[in-house]
Image (cartoon, rainbow, N blue to C red):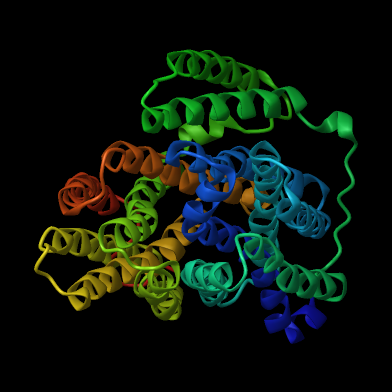
Amino acid sequence: MAELKKKRWLFIITIGLGTLLNPLNSSMIAVAVTRLQEDFALSFVHASWLISIFYLASAAGQPVMGKLSDMFGPKRLFMTGLMLVALASLLAPFSPNFLFLLACRALQAIGSSTLFPSGMSMIRTYITEGQGRALAILSIFASTSAAFGPSIGGFFIDLWDWQAIFFINFPFILMSFLLAIFILPDTKENLALKQIDLIGIGLFIASITSLILFLLSFEEGNIRWWALFAFLITSGIFYKFEAQHRAPFMDVTSLKKNTKVTMVYGQFMSINLIYYCYFFGFPIFLQQALTYSETQTGIIMLALAGFGVIIAPLAGRMIDKLGSKLPAVVGIGLLVIGTGLLLTYHETSSLGWLLVIMSVLGASNGFNNISMQTALYENIRPEDTGQASGLFQTSRYMGAILSSSLLGIMFNQQVGYENLHLVAIICLIFSVLVFAMMLRLPGKLTDSNR
């Protein structure tokens, strides 16, 4: 432990280099969709599955990998995740067809889903002082990769082609893997396979996959009612099975009683529904309505994601001094303001005004990510960090998938100012509701609650 304190920064950097892979690969694809449509002769609905499959696999995989991290040790799972991302990134550029590419994206998502919960488990265990600052640094890794993802992706697609967005992963994978060997602490967990609740895991995956397939069908215009029925059946069986299991994959009884944690998950899902409407909607609007190139779009998008990088250290210091509630209220307040300002953006507005609006929305994300994450950890046991972190990420992906479905409905026929304003009105309603819920979170707005 004493040796780890001396290597604190290397410890955080090692985890950060791994955890950035998920947001990097989810953001780079946004500017590659148009090029992939041309290369594989796809409609927008079919091409959007490159985004959807990543979130579907991540949403189902995060809690599972988090639970395995709690059981078998976070270092072991962290390094396994890096190897899976490397394999997927190596195979994807040589995809002979679209289905093979989708499979590579799913494998990439599963591998990167291992990195966040195992990394958070190690942070929670080995960094007990200044945890808010540590989380802020990790948020910078994630926010920076998300911020520069469209820019990096757009640059390399213009320079080479879509295959470049997969090869970009290897420097980060290699650095994180080599550092992990020497820096990350070994753990002694070594449970037998029979101790894993395989039935519970299978039911959870079936339930969450059915729900996501139902939500995605709204985007495609052909609603899968069978998926909703499958979700209701599998989720009901999952709840009853886990409630009676001696060593459940998910302690649903405790989760039901801990309403604070449930509220955090619900709020974070709603926040990401709003944020990803902008994160995925703005590139489409910029390219199709305002006719900017991939490179120009990537640069403009820095205003949205980049401000989260600037705000994250401030949010981390506020959390260490005041707890999670005040930064959370500030973050969702900025989201309400930014969404309201978007309704003032019209055909005669300048690009500068859009950049201002995007900056406000980006700043809100810098507060929201860290404050909601801290609020979660304030209300769970340390030994449950891996799975709780996985469910936290699942709520993020559910919000992202809902945003994808909303954009598919709003942008299906045409992309213009009117459609953008309809999206903003829906997001404004959600943001006001979340702000009201945020005020009910435990904690004080001014005094320290640490």
